[in-house]
Length: 267
Image (cartoon, rainbow, N blue to C red; front, side):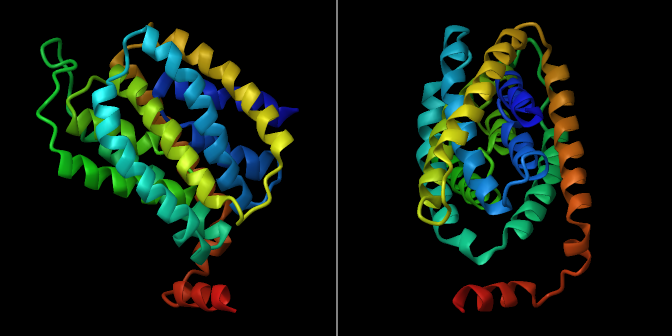
C-alpha cells in the first residue's frame, strides 16, 4: 500500500516539474515494491508515459505546450530510446543501470544550475530552432532514457529551456508530450526482454495519474525559481540515495566490468 501511495508523488512531480517522475518511479519499484531492477526500469517507462499522457490535457488547457518544439524534438528522442532499450540495455545489468541513472541525475542538476535566468522580457521568447542540434540532443536524451529507465524529463526540460527559448513552465508542459511518446518507445523496446505484470502496471499508473492532476493545478501558483529549486532537490536526493544503495557494486567496479558484462551476455 505504501508503494501505491508513493505512486501519487510520481504524477505530482510530472505535473509540477515536467519531469522527475522516473526519478521517483524506479526507486519506488525497486526499494519499496521489491521488484527486479531491470523490470522496474521497463515498467517505469510505461508508468511515466501513461501518466504524462494524462497530464498533457491539463497543460494544454493552460497553454503550456509548444507542439512545434515537441514535434522537432520527439521523433529523434523516440529513435534513440528504442535503440537503447531494445539493444544497448542488454549489455548492462539492472544494478549497473541504476548506478548510471544516479550519476546522470546529478549531472542534470549541474546543467540546471547553468540554465539561463528568466526575466519578464525573455519568457517564452523562442529562438530560431536549430533542427540538427535539437535532433542530436533528442537522440542523446533517447539513448539515456532507454538505458536508465527514465522518461527523460530531467534532461528534456533543461534542453527546452536552453535550446528552444521556452520558459520553465512552458518547458514543463511541452516535456510531457515528449516524455509520453519517448517512454512508450522505450517500453516497446523492452517487450520480449522482461515479463510485464499488466494488472500491476495499470493499477500503479492509476494512482500516479491522480497525482498529476494535483501537480498541474499547483503549477499555476508556483514561481519559476521555486520550480527549479524543487527540481534540483529531487535530482540530488535520488541520485545520492541510489548510489548509497548500490555502494558495494560501485566500490567493486573496475575497468574490465564492461568486458565481463559483454562476456556474460554472449554466454
